[in-house]
Length: 128
Image (cartoon, rainbow, N blue to C red; front, side):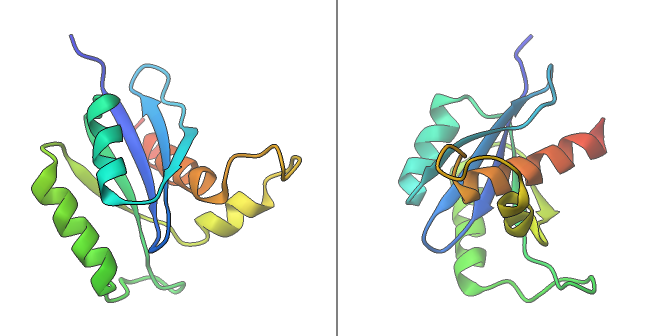
C-alpha cells in the first residue's frame, strides 16, 4: 500500500512556501520555498505527493474574498497539471502566526514555509 503524502502550500506572488506531511505521522514540517510553478511541479513529482492543501485568502469576518486573478491562475494551472486532490483551506493570519513562533529568527525556516506548515497541520488536525 502506498503512503499518502501531503503538500501544504502558502502561495504568494513572489514566493511559494511548502510543507510536507504523511498519513502515518500526521505531522506537518516546513520543507522549502520555491520561486515558480515549475519548481513546485518538480517537488510534487519528486516527493510523490498524493494530496495538496493550499491556503485560501478569506475575509477576517468570514466569507470568501474574490480570488485575485494571480491566485486563480495559479489554482487553475495547478488543477490542469496535477492529478491529485487539491483542498483549499482558510489561511487567515497564517503568516502572522508563523512570525509569532518563538526561536532565533536566523535559524528558523522561512516565514512562507512555516505558514505552509501551519496551514497543512490545521488540515491534518481536522481530518484526524
